[in-house]
Length: 225
Image 1 (spheres, helix red, strand yellow):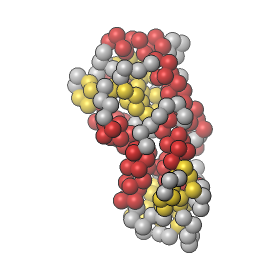
Image 2: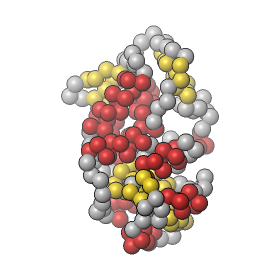
Image 3: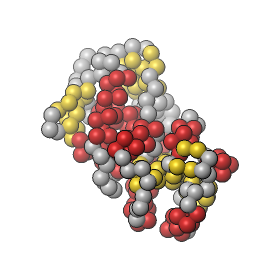
């Protein structure tokens, strides 16, 4: 496993590196160093949100334009809006400081297991097409159309959408969705993040047949294909 650690606190950076003893570790202490060390073979980036030469949020957006590498934010910002912003920017997970290195390892392993289960890059380009009522979602090519018009979705929105359409006609609980989209059962995630993701899908895909099943979760309704 190759890990890029981007953290300006030298003691914490080295502590994280030691906790992953035996793995291939790259250490950066600012965004400039991270850019110089980045390579496609990296499995996961552990990224501080506040860095000396810029915002981890901006660097995450930059990475997402060229790579689907797993990203975990580390930050002292523990407000709900900060967590939601981090996840919607494209991060796979979000850990607030202070934190346990054991928990960090568990979160890293959970994310990599989930990505491995999804097939990772090996399945990219495979035909995974869903069509219904003017919507066309190709999850293999990551092309999403509404009445023929392309729609840009975040990774969180893509995961949520895929879960809903592949379980079309079945109600999915909030707990199941949160577990599958973000934490894989590793730790609690604020449930409001799911509501935000659903509302963003409804905004980007007008008329999308996502039904709220109050007290339970969400349902992609069957319709004319």
